Length: 191
Image (tube, rainbow, N blue to C red; front, top):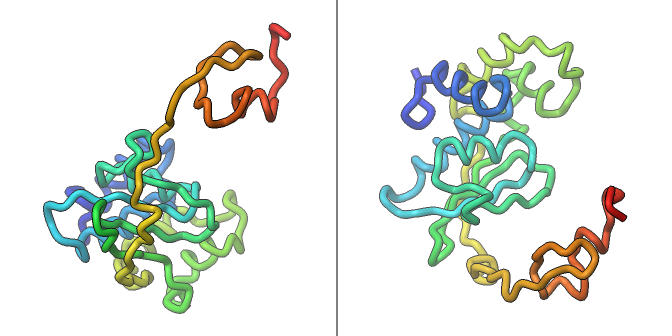
């Protein structure tokens, strides 16, 4: 029986449901991926994370590691791939884990989910969850990587200015007005 971090598979599914809203297959898969990555890294080191999709996978990283978007230890790079990297903060040595499509043929429910061959409402959630559990580590690739030195630097926000339009603080390096006012994704009620 596989554990995901300190949890049984079913305990992790319950944790995912309480955090994510339902026991999403992407977070369950992600939990196994995080577990696999951690098993291939030295114990006791602090690691940063790179997540290659904004969908579900960041939640697994946040549930099982100290790396979050909020503390800056996780970067989400939207490459659209179901992959994550955990790496040592100083030297960049780490491991990348990904769903390996070459290993999915025995797991059609997982393959259909990953490749979005079946609409979500038509998926057999129970069968999918059971296949994720049964597949264990068998559907993933795991490779050692070294993060490029430029990505290891922490970027400072720099000085803060007040936007002359919305009157809110923003990083001065963004220009004469904040990025939100540059884009205007909504109309302001007080304009």
